[in-house]
Amino acid sequence: MSFTLDKSEIPEGIEKRESHLYGIVGVLSQPGTIGEGVAAFGGYFRHDLETGNVCDGQLVDFWGQSEIVNFGFMGETALSFSKRYLNRRDFINYEFNKDENGLWIGTYSGAAVGEGKAQAKTNLIDDDAFSILCGIPRRS
Image 1 (cartoon, rainbow, N blue to C red):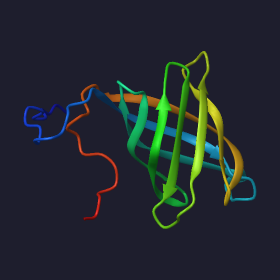
Image 2 (spheres, one colour):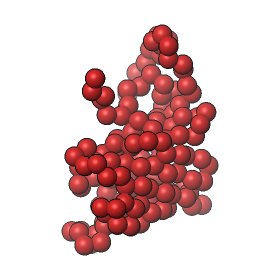
Image 3 (cartoon, helix red, strand yellow):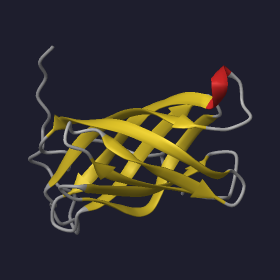
């Protein structure tokens, strides 16, 4: 499928920032749950090339939909972000390092969920994500 996005009209007062859109899919361990404690997750995020920030993302897993909150970071060998389920207030923090095969290997932690292991793969979806709507719609 091929499509064209009109990235020429930027609203007044908004500075164009170079960013990429990434897809992410992975698994995490959750001791004490069904399926031998392993659950899949997937979603997307925007990567700001100027700052390295990971932002404007959404994830979904067995427990529901979550949003990437605050700012995470993605570099050549490190990836981190925090997520919050839409129906909860607590944060879950992820930290990964890239292995020699390009797989992100790491951990997650949060006051309500404890700690566990996670691994993920990211895929570049669009190399000019500035004008792509991402994240949870903001209520005014």
